[in-house]
Each structure stands twice: as structure tokens, then as C-alpha cells.
Image 1: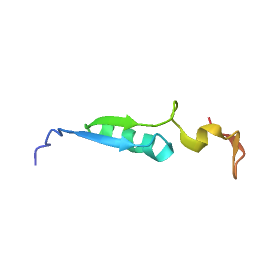
Image 2 (image 1 turned 180 degrees about the vertical axis):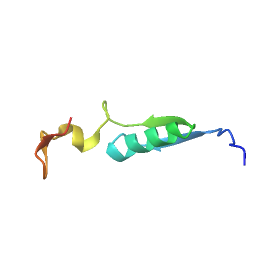
Image 3 (image 1 turned 180 degrees about the horizontal axis):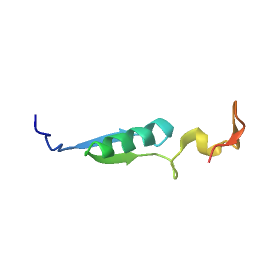
Image 4 (image 1 turned 90 degrees about the vertical axis):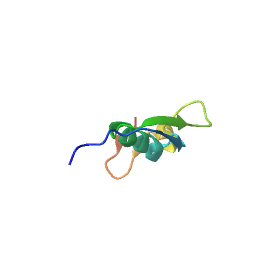
Length: 60
């Protein structure tokens, strides 16, 4: 079975962790991705955290 070339575009609303991961996954599959975030930066709440539970790692 021959691989079909993907065409089209996808709109991902929200630039949090899930939105960014979805955009990356879709782009890897060959889709054009438009990522829309209402705030000035992406990352959502995760970008505001200093440390994360349970490993106490830096979230950035």
C-alpha cells in the first residue's frame, strides 16, 4: 500500500502543554498547523510554575 501525501491544515486552539504537543504531533504527520493562543506566550500554567510535583523538577 502506497503512502498517501497528507494535505490540509489544522487549527489548534490553546497554547498550553496539550495544545503545543498536539500541534507538534500533527505537524510531524505532515499537516500544516496553526496554533492560536490568546495570551502573549505559550505554555499555559506550566510556564508559570517554578517546580513540578512529584519530582521537584524545573517546569521550563
